[in-house]
Image (tube, rainbow over all chains, first blue to last red; front, side, top):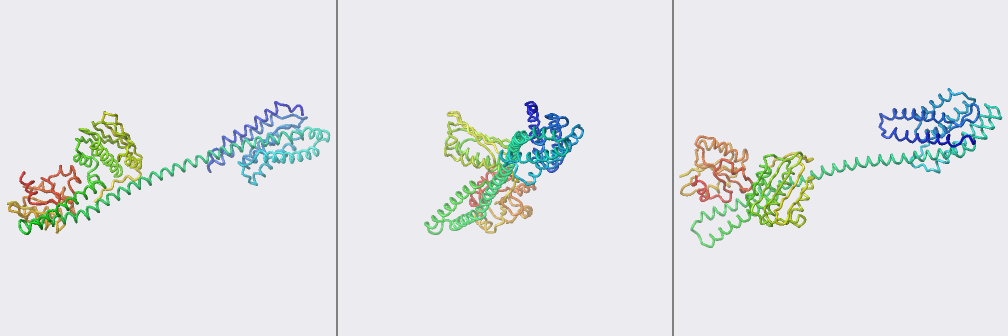
Length: 430
Length: 118
């Protein structure tokens, strides 16, 4: 008992700890194809550890060895399952058979019993990751009581009574104290690892879920933007086909009536016809402005360059337009158009500029927009200008916007819109 | 005397335009309802001026204007639309037309302003 001593215990403890490493390395990524190979590998590794443990025994008497192999096999049965345990057990039995010794039958029977008890508990399917130190200690104690019982029985039947008695006398104390504690400690170590692994798996699943959801949200956001744009195009068309046509017809009718009247009729009638024609004309202008603000037809028909040139024509400030003939997804063109439109409106309203420049360039997978003026600068990008609404419009396409406006140094607006939008079909209208 | 062909798919507009264009110098010699008939009518009637709607049912007015420009002794083309010039921008500037009049502003006077400077 004194001979058991520290070195052997430490050696055994170190070897048992290696089980945790096997547990970590193998079966960390369990896919159906890999399961069998991994079980075979972990069985072999456990067998090697088991043999190593058996090579560091406490030599009790001639042919009688004790070591912590039962701890290994109990834990293997419980945590690794039947196939790895059977392989490890096979290797250890084979090794034991090559060794001389009187107690080989007892030793082998002990190993089989340990593995069997581990597997039996596993078979009852406890939630391994929820096992506590107390439960594992009780389990370790129970199994080793049974093993002690069997060993005692076998020793007394296979060995001379004096040797058996001495062996059991030296064996029962460590078997009922050190071994259960070792079983519980190793078990807890594996439970902790199991929990960590489940946490990692759960994290990976969660991340994958979040990524999928993000992708779905992006796609649905792009669909919403596209639906909004389609709706704006439809409203523009409806205004054109409906109210606008009627107003034109009314306006022409009034002018036809007025021209038929020429100098004839009473002056008041002529005047009221003139006024009505003017009213119809004014309504038409307002309606067209409204339609243009909802969705400019020129954008879908002729692209961003033509649409921005049309904006530039109307601007009180001299605007240089530098936009290539490239076409982009409708949602991207619409967002770019409204950003530029708002930026030019701000230039006209606040900048006191003499000239402005609009530049649009495709760059890799996005569009770069730059609007600059030579005005007074000092624009606050957070102030309530229409730019904040545009920021949202851009964000819906994963686009960004920045404003550089030093006081007295002009204003530069940069915007960037990804051009590979989830629903990027260019749909010409009309 | 200058002859005019009116091209628009809306009969009411054609009648109104006819009323508003006729004066001591202009005479409306024919009407067409789409791009294809605009080209055949131009060939047969040889008008001096074609008042051409941009939004025709078959091809758009820009395309028709381009075809007419390639005819022998082509007519002057004046485009019109129920939208205003902002809806077309550079397409108008690059077109083969001598000018553009929004539909509600059609009149002999507006037509003179374009035709007489040619």
